[in-house]
Structure formats: structure tokens, C-alpha cells
Figure (cartoon, rainbow, N blue to C red):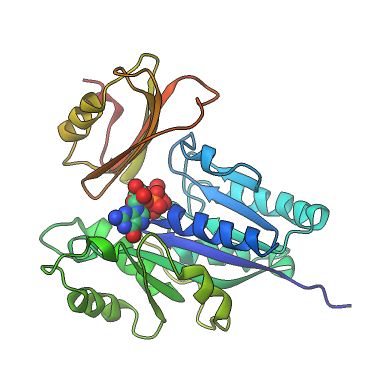
Length: 306
Ligand SMILES: Nc1nc2c(ncn2[C@@H]2O[C@H](COP(=O)(O)OP(=O)(O)OP(=O)(O)O)[C@@H](O)[C@H]2O)c(=O)[nH]1
């Protein structure tokens, strides 16, 4: 008897492009439609500061490295566990969010190995693109070779391209320019035009599984890493801004949960492409310690704590 493979949707894309936002949209949509979802989440840092966003899901966290290279073996262990969970909990689909520097090719390669290839099938490799910054990330004038290579590979490997953050696209970086650069790297994958990941999941469902999902090549991203800062005392929003400002040349992405000095409430913050979003949390985090993750090129702990 043929065993039905569990469909897997990969969600990749550069740091801060909106992968988690797309993931949450998908998760909520599937939940509403009584589709049981398991989630694999990969983070460069050793803590997932967005855990509060996933309450009831079967969640597999792979922390402290990238499943496409440094913790590839952890992905294999997780896939073995996931197989059991799929059977026990009657999971219908798997959503996997890579780190912002993941090379989807390497992840696809692991899924193609035995015994995983017998149980799972990648049906879409979604590449979420930050439409506001993709021109910078692919420009020789504003990004390092590593960032350019990585962004290029992520776009190339997408079976579905999401031009996200369109709400923020100014005339200067008009959509045509963005499309042109994206099409230079991937001429054929369907494009979804989106803000806050809206509309992606409906398209995912309606599309025929892609045929060009393949694993080739490997971008090197050894210099992009995460540094965690634990905050035992409350901090102000201004102190966070000052910290980001101080390291602005190296920090590409930051996120965290901290207690605010001013009202002693807990806040979650997101910093991507130079923009800080600061939101009050409904519940106090379990650890009761502030956690700040800084992600960037050539970041060193010594420099941050100097
Ligand atoms: N204005 C705007 N902001 C967005 C959009 N999509 C996501 N964001 C915000 O951008 C920030 C980063 O979004 P995430 O979904 O966490 O990005 P990510 O790609 O998962 O980030 P990584 O942690 O680097 O993997 C958050 O503050 C989001 O709310 C969008 O379409 N428009």
C-alpha cells in the first residue's frame, strides 16, 4: 500500500522579510479550516523570542544555528521525531521556517534523503522578499558579497515568490525595479504581491505543487550570526534604540522581549531594515528575563558588551 507523504511548505527569505508573519497567516488559516499543522522553526539565536506567538501548535524548535549547515543533523533528528508526531497527532501539513540566512537548497537536500523522502514531500519553497530593501540587498554599493549571494540564492530557489511589505514601498523603489531584479534571479516562479503576508496561503493552496524544487549550490553565510543579550533589569525603549544605533553598521536584524523601565510592562520588539516595532505583550514571559537577539554580519560579543 502506498503511504501518503505529508506535504511540507518551506518558508525562507532574508532576515526580517516577513517569514514569521507569513507563517502565522498560514497557521491561522489552516487552523480555521481544521487542517492540523506542525511547525519547524529554525533560529540563529539560542532562544526563540517569538514563542508566545505559537500556543497550541506542534512546534519543533531548532535553535542556535542554521539547519542548512551548522545544525543539519538536528534537522534529521527532528524529522524522525516529526514522523512519529504526524502519525500520533494526525498532522496534515508541515510548515518550516528557515533562518533569514538559510539556503533552501540544503534543506531540500535533507528532505530528499532516506528515510525522510518516504514520509515527507516539499510541495512549495516559498521565498519571502522584503520589497523595500531587496534592491539594497542585491546591490554591490550597499551590501556585502555574502548578503548579495544569499539573497540571490534564496530568490533563485523559490518555487513561489512573495513580494512582501508592499505597504512600505515608496515611489523611489518602485515595484517595477523590484520585479526586474527579482526576475533576473528567477524568471518563472509565480509572484504574490503582499503586505503582512496576506494572500499567500490562499495562493499556496491553489497552486499545483512546483516541479522545480531542487537542491543546488550553497551560499556561505558564516559571518552572519546571532548574539543574545540577557536583561535582568528593566530597560527603556530609548536604551534599545541607542543599542541598535550604536551597532547599526553591523546589525541587520534584532528582536526581543524586555521589561520596560517606564511602566514595568513587558514588550516585544522587532527591528528589521532599520525600523523598530514596539508592542506591549499580553502576558509576562515565563523566564521573567529580558532577551535581546542581535543578528548581523561580523558581530562580536566583545564589541557589543564594550
Ligand atoms: N510594514 C510592514 N511590516 C511587515 C510586513 N511583514 C512583516 N512586517 C514586520 O516586519 C518585522 C519582521 O517580520 P517577521 O515576520 O518577524 O520577519 P522574519 O523574516 O520572520 O524575520 P527573521 O527573524 O529575520 O527570520 C515585524 O515587525 C513584522 O511585523 C509588511 O508587509 N509590512
